[in-house]
Length: 497
Ligand SMILES: [Zn+2]
Ligand SMILES: [Zn+2]
Ligand SMILES: [Zn+2]
Image (cartoon, rainbow, N blue to C red; front, side):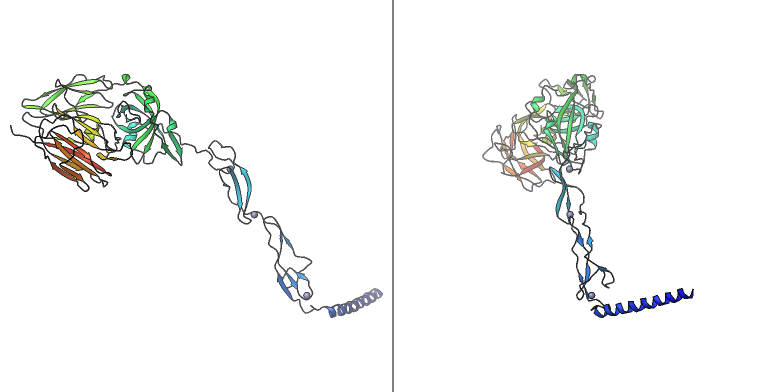
């Protein structure tokens, strides 16, 4: 044992001696034996496609490289870093292709053509809308519902609605203006133009637009007034009316029956009807008034519109869609009607706060009842109603440019005393109306007018300046503007009997 221990100690001493000598030689020659003189060397940044290197430290004295500032971890070469992934977001697209975009290397990536449109009209990869899908048509609304609660958005859907067609245009109407009427309630929708097919509608940006093709005449063989038809309707919030296209005829007018009723509030007389049940659209009904002793007929009205008495003194109306309510006013036998009031309602035939009647570019004649069978025929041109009274204007849309005019073509029985004009309140765009009186029909614009109604006039009475005048004429005489007139009242001279 002793020998082994001695040998081990001897070997250990030799080892220590050798090691000490080696160190003395090496350390003697190390210029960094008291520490390195290291400075930071920036690595190269990795990119989306190339790797880089880490920062490191290099000793200026011994040229050794270290990964750490304390120079504890010597390295032989800069440590490489991995290339980066592209920094992309959601799919982007143009009309034909989709792609992603790396905002680090500013490169379009994964560029490819869109897929075929899927069931929703979209690219199945990027979701771009390639074919705008129209919303499904609304088929569960009725005329009465839409009339009671009009849409609040502009033409965003098409309503397929069934109703009775009541035209407002004349036989040569190219547009197809009229009313779609609820058979039972008489509620109606204003139709401003009817196209033969849905192709008159185009859908873009969530809204339907309508190009009125003026092809209404081509629908003449598809249905007639009083037929029940189905229309596709797109609503205009601006005009509070509907553009439409014809879908189908649902029933013919002969199959649709109406009843007529007599207003229960009639006093100083009664009326009877020649027929009141099983009526069809357009059928003529005769109203026979029976005034009480000392009274005479002032007005017989059908659905609120006065009926002119025929040459035989009888009153007739034509059955229309909805309720047909007949009313009468009886007045003292000695009473004389001292005025005629012309409004959008009685001149243009129908109107409402949401109504819309296009202007006419040809002369229209209309017979208005003054009282009983006293009536007058008026001729008018270029008067419109968009729910804001009689719009009397200079029309710049048509050729030749036309100005509103209105005059009577049959004489008033009584001499005219004056005319009172009342502007529609709340309308600011105004022109000039010129008023003339005559002893003969004023078919042409006269050289001189009695007076004008203009600018800020809200109401004005223009006295007749012609003795024995039984005719009047009103012309729109300014080169711009439109006068919105609530009423034109012709006041007569009533001479005591
Ligand atoms: Zn060094
Ligand atoms: Zn990139
Ligand atoms: Zn795509």
